[in-house]
Image 1 (cartoon, one colour):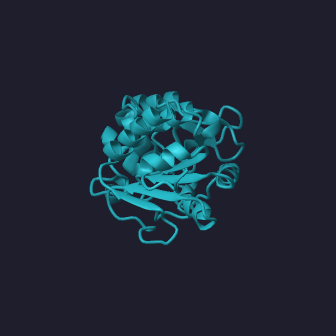
Image 2: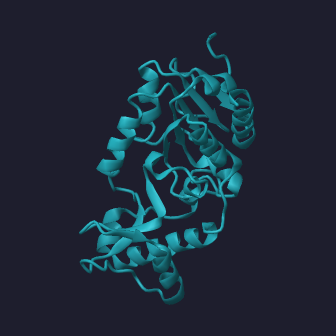
Length: 255
């Protein structure tokens, strides 16, 4: 079999694909890029975990921000690119999907739980930083929006927080271990919609690439990995069009 020369051929010839996704895969669903011109990084103050835990005003402000995000995003549906990854899982080609996103759209696209690795947490969950309790966030958001009622852990009475990684908070050890294991034996790594500038998240795709695994980057805009010798293909442009059509064509060849 000849060496693959384009995205479609790489997909067809691969059996263990690991994806790494960022905000750019969700902009097609009208979710602003976090670091883009209209992203919340430009319009909101940074609230650290320490701020949240020790300052009631900051805690309330954080719940206001996240409740607004939840309300705006709860009915947004996954994009064709999200569904295309699920299609590859159906074809038996998906090993893992590592995402920086907290929007839950990979879940809405029915990515299997055992293959989905959410590095920065999930918007639809809450957790207690004291006892480790975890649960769904819907009631917490609804209560805050309706009554400005701060949620309390039902197990230990401490503060609940949205299950997303805040500034000054380390990534969860169990999640990091899963991501590291996912990068041990893929035969293709594809990064979609990420600037690849956030650490330590961006170390995962390059980890496999440096070991000789083919590495493809699809993004609209520059990335921190552009020009690296480890990158097999760099595709610039509309993610939905480039990736979804490639998976469709690969599916036709695979079938």
